Structure formats: structure tokens, C-alpha cells
Length: 281
Picture 1 (cartoon, rainbow, N blue to C red):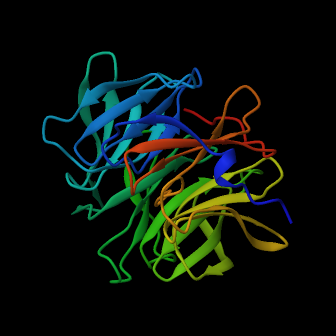
Picture 2 (cartoon, rainbow, N blue to C red):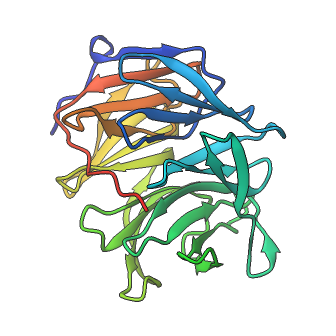
């Protein structure tokens, strides 16, 4: 079992962030974070924090993904829209706001598939078991990708081998794997782990182990074939406080960084894990 990290191992990288839940790594190793008031922050690994974009309509910004052109795809729960945000021009364009002619409900988290298409969780209402996964192809056409993880599908990530999509459902807590067929359609679903928690985000390592961060309790887990173990936790909710999502970044891709949604800061641990290379289109 990997050793659990303690408070002394955790560094506060930045403070003063408006309840950030989602984050992603940029093209040059910088970190982008969203907020519940429509702000997008840029954070460097030396702790410099700036607001680089602001939605005119406010917004509750959840998942973020960087594109090869430097734009961000941003899931906005309030606007029920996935935006493409140009950080140079400060423009917000609709990337997706409907599927099969119906409006989105709660776009939450997205990532790219190997063919360059983008999939995201549309979580639905809490405990209504109506969540779906939507795919937007490289021509910008949206379609229903899967209804097989309906219990508030939340964080997602492409597996290390690129052959499956890893999906967290928040209530009840569950980690599943959906095979990606050769035509990029959704294949077989396998439940990997049931969790007595409210999991939110999943980060993939080169070994295939997964970092799973939770809205409740204040825990970051590590899951692999041996099972689920605590990587970091905080009974007092100070250094680890609703750690909704994580990234592994830095020169060695071993710095585990997360926003503490329960507070107003971003934390960091130097680990012996290694994140997979950034996949962008």
C-alpha cells in the first residue's frame, strides 16, 4: 500500500479563489481553474494567480479542457452550456448546448477521445438517475454517447491505454469503465469499484492507478487492481477540503494539485505518481 500523505506534505499553492471545482493543465504547464461566479483563473507553479476570463452572465464553471489552439472548453452548469473560451480575445462561443434537439441539463466534466471528439457528462438532477454522456464529434455535431452511467455522472478521464473512458458516478459512489469501440461509440460497461463516498474527479497515472478526489468526505483516494486506499485525508477539512478534482503536472508530472472547494485555496503534494501526457486536439 502506498504511504498516505500527511498535512506536513501539503503545500498551499494559491489562495483567494472563488470556490473552484474544475481545473486543467494548459499547453505550457500552467493551471486553469473555473469558479462559481464565472471567473477563469490562470495559476503558475510558482503560485502566481490571475483572472484571465470572466463570463458576462456569471456562470457556475465546472470541468475545463485545453485545446491545441489554446482555447478552453468549459462546462457551465448555470448556463447549461459547454463554452469554447478564447483567452486572447476574451470571447465565449457556444460549443454545445443541446443533444438530439434537447437542451443540456447539467454539463459537468469533459475530456477528449483518441479520435479528437469530445465527451462530457451531463449529470442531470441530483439523485434522479437521469445522467448521460454526450459526444461532440470533430465537426461539432453532438449526439448521445451513453446512458449507462445515470447516477449523476461526474468526473471522467481517458484510460492510460486510450481504450476506455473512466467515469465516476457521485450518488451512489461508483467508478466504471466504458469501452471505446473502433468507431468511437460506447461499448461494454464494467463497474470497477463501489464507493462509500461522493466521488467527483479522476486523474490517470502512467501505471494505470487512478487518483479519485471526493466532494465528501474530505479524502483523495488511490485506486488500482489491489483496491481503494487513502492517499490524503483531513478530518478537519482544512488542508483537504472537498478536493473535487486533481491534476498531475510539473516537469515530472508528479505534482498532485487540487482546488479545495470547501475553502478558497489550491493545494499541492509532491508524489511518486506520474500523470499521463496531456492529450489535446
